[in-house]
Amino acid sequence: MIVLALDIGGTKLAAGVVHGGRQVREVQVAAVPREGVWEVCRELLRAVAGQQRVSAVGIGTAGPVDARRGVTMPINIPDWSSGFPVVASVQELFPGAVIRIAHDGACLALAEHHIGGLRGVRDGMAMTVSTGIGGGIIEDGKVAVGRTGNAGHVGHIVVPGSQDPCSCGGIGCVEAVASGTSSVRWARAQGWTGESGIELARAAHAGDAIALAALERAGTALGQAISSAAALLDIDRVVIGGGFSESGEPLWNPMRAALARHARLGFLRELRVVPSRIHNGATLVGAGVLAAGHATADEYD
Image (cartoon, rainbow, N blue to C red):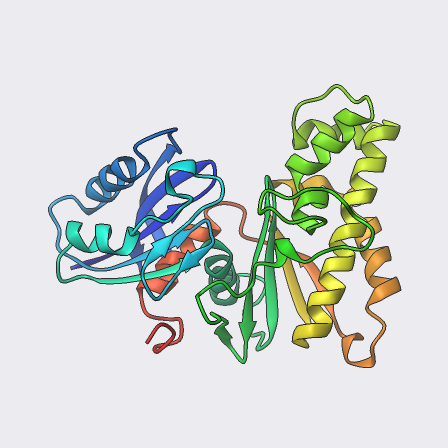
């Protein structure tokens, strides 16, 4: 009997076999297709399962989700944006297996809590800053789920003064200001000619004025959002991962400055914001933790 993990992301799909409740190996990865997303997921799961019996599957998916119904509604997968019954589909593939689902930010928090920067932390938050911004919350040593399974969508905290439209339909979300995608879009509107967040970070390190301004803008918005979340949740550790978060001091210095300006309440004096040490596959690892039953036992009852 084996345990599987499935990661349904905005740009890639991945499946793997869970070992020891927290390590994921024998991983199969594919790009998200324009159509037939479930068919690709099914083949990835079949490939890693082989001929072995499957006892449980953990699903980490781009959100929003409806965890009670086992439905995912990813904003960035058009075929599924109105809802896809992923739990029922996986259950049909592996009859008798336990299927657990969480949004990818919650899986990120689970991974960080078990093997990363939130290990040993009772109250903290994990964030990913990449093409989008997501997150998950650890509360009293357990992943916070919320009414529908969507607790932790930190990317949709509204930052002061922003009128940037967000893919969620709202205005001024930190994702619309500080993600890699949004920062590149803003920089290009100012006359920068690069294409990616990696190029933007390199340009900032090389002293390009527009790139530096884009990363300062993003870092400031991140610091504002983290300050708000920390005050609301009473947390003392935030771990940040994702490709755009690796932009270095041009992003982190304005973020730290914003934290110093906004996180002024006494109970926030011990707040630490640190980079993630999990550089690849955090959502898949978290889905493995979820599948192995290390999350709260009654979270979706």
